[in-house]
Length: 389
Image (cartoon, rainbow, N blue to C red; front, side, top):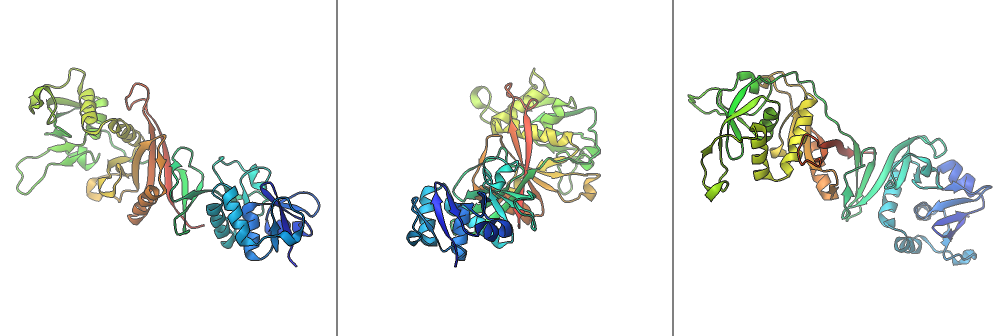
């Protein structure tokens, strides 16, 4: 005969041989001393569903004849406990995959794990029990319609439950990017600032061929050689390093006095300031975040190029020797505010696309300093990929 549980507050207590039956042999609950154990609501629901508990007595009652089955207990728990239904689905799925789990809160065994408050469960290494404490996955359960703060996600396993109760798992890790591209730009370049790019008319060949800066102006039977179009982030980075000067600046359409477009002299504040100002004109404050991330990637010997075709800010190449022998890009990078909140749908789309083109999805969580410039920005890296537990 199966034992009966008794709901006491937010836990279900089971006596008899419960410790040996559930805790010692199968990692459910926590010991209360002797043979009695306490189960979380999710654990009790799982044992009810499996038929390993005969029922649960609700409301502090003591008569086992008043015990309810899985259906009633599930509905009562969903009303009483936050996000009970989605947490139950993930707990049951991971149990079916062969993992022992504990709630990641005191006084359960999982509460001793060094995990964030947002983590719901810890799943132990296969073959490990709550007593051994070998945590494999710190699991944060997320409903499809919830939002998810980007900050602090590294080190967690995200279990996203969609509206049809299917579960998708993601691993969030530190995604810092470091490359091995050995290239120093030339000492001096001169370009013309257009509305949303810079053209360098006499760029040395290796600026593009080895540094992978810009895009050549090419075409059939072209008579112009050495002309390179730089994006505004590329131009701003080179100008800030003292490499790029501006011979002229063409006002953006709609800018300047009377909204006329025409050629002017470069800004008196210097080429870097002129390019950054143009970037802010065409892109707003997002330009500073993208420039900060671009600079960090170049500082780490990676080569960032536009990720537009993939819906990202950048794609990255870690080891460029020559464009003629260019490897596949390894990462897609999307730049977001440090306080950005993901929707699970948005996250799934980015990760699925990156996996489909055999790239790692990295989010650059970026805070611009009080001076509003990219130089003092703080950038942290978050890699998120699909996971099969």
